[in-house]
Amino acid sequence: MERTLIAVKPDGVQRRLVGQIIQRFEQRGFKLVAVFFDKVSEDLLSQHYGQLRTKPFYPSLLHYMTSGPVVAMHHL
Image (cartoon, rainbow, N blue to C red; front, side):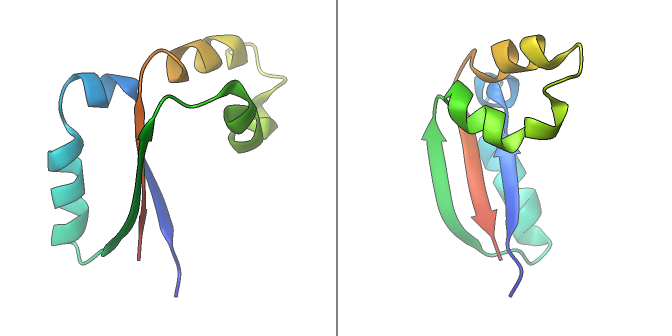
């Protein structure tokens, strides 16, 4: 079975949209199997966004993604 990674980025967490986002995916038949809520390290981000390292916006992406907590979820 295929898994889907869903991430609510710092601005979505700050705006308290996590519950609404989870609800939308569950209404479409996705089953939540894991949730992670924490600040993301630059090491993890460099693995996830590795293909973007040479782009001029990469430093601002890292700054944005480490500016607050992220909610990452795995759905089936």
